[in-house]
Length: 44
Image 1 (tube, rainbow, N blue to C red):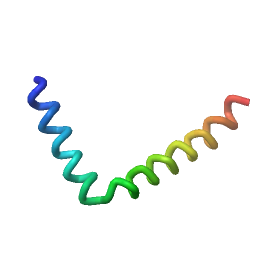
Image 2 (cartoon, helix red, strand yellow; image 1 turned 45 degrees about the vertical axis):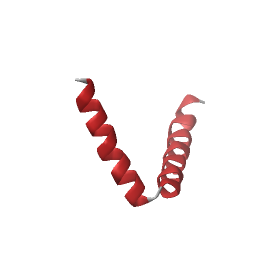
Image 3 (cartoon, rainbow, N blue to C red; image 1 turned 60 degrees about the vertical axis):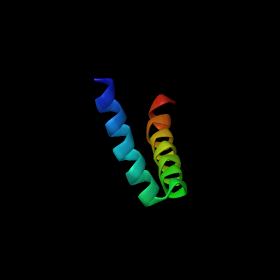
């Protein structure tokens, strides 16, 4: 079970390195912003 998780993580890591870490982080940041804007309005 744990071995599979490590393999998955390794595959993800290869993809992330190929994309570029900074691009991925920026993308995550935008997703968080969008979620905050979309759902933040509903909470008010």
